[in-house]
Structures are given as C-alpha cells and as structure tokens.
Length: 292
Length: 162
Image 1 (cartoon, each protein chain N blue to C red):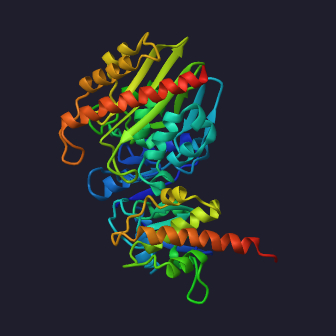
Image 2 (image 1 turned 90 degrees about the vertical axis):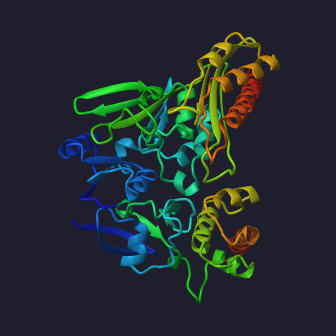
Image 3 (image 1 turned 90 degrees about the horizontal axis):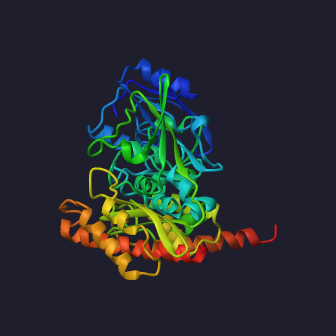
C-alpha cells in the first residue's frame, strides 16, 4: 500500500480531529482485511490510514439491560466465541464464526463488515435480522441508524469512513419467546463466500409467531428483507410445517439473486433459498418450543 | 515518511523503520530476512503467510506492519531450532506432514496457537483451527495426525513428574 502516513489515535475526539485534518484523504481502518486488499489492488484509495483497532474506547462489547453494545474494535472471533452471545444471539455468533477463516476472524471487525457494505457479509445479514442499529459519530453530530439503512448500492455504505466513525453496534436483547437463527450454503465451510445466507428472528407466543424479521444475502445490493414472507409469518402456528415451507417459497420468490459463475444460476440460488429459509424456520420453531 | 516500528519478534524487542503502508509480511521477509513466512496468494485466501500476533494466528499479507506496534509477533523462526524443535515441528516431521513445505510454517503456527489454548483438542477443533490454510499437496490427513500426536506429546510432558 502506498500511504503517506499511518496514524493511531488514542481516543474518539483525536480520531475525528485526524479525519478532519486529512479532509477526506484519510480513512479509518479497523481489522483491515478487506480494506488492505482493496488498497493493494487499487479498488480503494486513501492517503493515510487512521487505525482505530487499539483504541480503548472502542474495544470489546457489553450486554446492557436492553441491548448488546458491540464497540467498533470488536472482532468476529470475540463475538463467535462468547458463551453469553452464543446463548442469546446464536444467529450472530454463528454468522460471525462463518466469516473468512480463523486468521481473518482474529482481526476483522463487525463494524468493518457493516461499513464494507457487501451484501454477502455474514455478520451484517445477522445484524439486520436482529434489528440492530449503528451509532455513528462525526464532528459535532451523533446519529443512530438501523443497519439496513446504511447501504447505497453494491459495496457502498452511507457511512463515509473518511469523515465519520461507526462507534458501536446495538443489538436488542431478545425478549421472552424470541428466537434467532442463522445459516448459509457454501461449497466449503471456510474461506468461502456463501451461495446464499440468511438469518431470522421470530417473536413467538402461545404456539404462534407474532412477527418475524428475515434477512438474506447475497440476493440484492444489501442484506435483503423479503416483506411478503415476513408478513406471511404473522400469526402462523409453530407446528404448521406446510405454512413454514410456504414462507420459504415466498422468500425465494422475492429474492433477486444474480446469475453467477461462482455461486450458480439465479434459479438454482432461489431454490436453495427456499430450502434454507424453511430449514431455518424449522430450527427457530424447535428452539421456541424448547423455550416455551 | 518512514515510521519507527518497535515490537517483540520471536522473543526479542526490535526496532525497524518501515513505510507507512508496508505489510507485516514484507517487513518480515524483505527487511528482516525471515523468509520462513511465505507469500502465497497475497489476498488472505491461503494461510501461507500466517504468523502469531499476541499468540493468535493472523494473516501477515493483510496486516499493515504498523499494527504490530508494541505487540508480540511469532514467526516460524521463533518456534524451535535444528537442535531443539518445538513438539509441533517434531510431530510434523515424524508423521510426514510435510510435502512441498510451502503451507507448513503457517500450519505449524496455527497448530501451536491451538495447542497453547486447548491442550486436548478434538479432531473437529483441529480441523476448525486449520481451516484457514490450504495445502496444495492435499496432505491434510497427515497434518491432522501430526497435531493429534503433538497434543499427546505435550500432555505427556506436562503430566511428567518434575
């Protein structure tokens, strides 16, 4: 990488000052596993990198009363290995454990996966299904936005990491009767992008689904929520296997996967999605039954 | 503008002047002549460039060298020497887990990190720990056996009376 400088701020204010000082020519880096490769191959440009991965303000995560707060320096490895997260947010733990390889997960961050804005990003797909929000700081301003609103075209985030910083991801704590699951279909288990992936979270009560959120990738320019399939979930009886299968069919119909020489043709991927969503719904329903 | 990088490399604190955008892989191989760390794909897909950063495996081809500032890096040269091999290296030799040898330094380092954190890993845990490494000679079975053998050796040593 051809850089003019490599800076390591100690706190968030210093970081924002550095970004302002470089007037859009500096760029934040956390794990850097995507950014470094993009800079090396000319797919991204920056004159300096501002490394936030060792800033104490941005390290680790904590479970508060109503939400899990994941700071920007938190790696996929940390999230996937944590027993409390595996118990409360199995979708997120499993999605994080599916990213890249152990070496990648030891440095790559969830915040980076969101800002990189790839529609196949496992952790971002899970975060969307879980209704997570991102806290973003810029000089003199703070905003909180649902993850799904942070996309503006393929690989394009609304977050400008040369001027602002995603500081935390905030995931609601599941209430009673709420379950979440994640799955992916890929040719290999490691070092492999998914042909399709999906996460869902269901609110259930008295043997019925009250509501559900489904996120799927890579079938659009962002983690995609099939609105008709989500509507079909409402009021569905947990034991009604045929209805679950129908939700999978609708979700597959709503998705718009591209023909891909790496991932298979569109029809094939749509078919896989139907099966994946049905399987995940069955998994979620059996978890809900166990909890009831 | 060159940057001063100070870190612990294979047990010794060192200082080296690096370009701001230089990758750890290039600093190790070109400035410090530690060529045991291999450059395979250069894109984070093969695992040949794996080193340990604070004891955890990372890909040096995707790591800006400045990320090592103040931290502890272990390369294959830091594990053992010809007189005294690390148990993982010994087992790789004994089980024939080396063919062309290009993936070996990375495989050995990920195995070492696994065994440092989990002394009796299951077969699945070993496969998981090595899942970020490709062996183009496809000698995976012997590599798995070598890690199991090293785990046994290390647990025998730790059980032996002082």
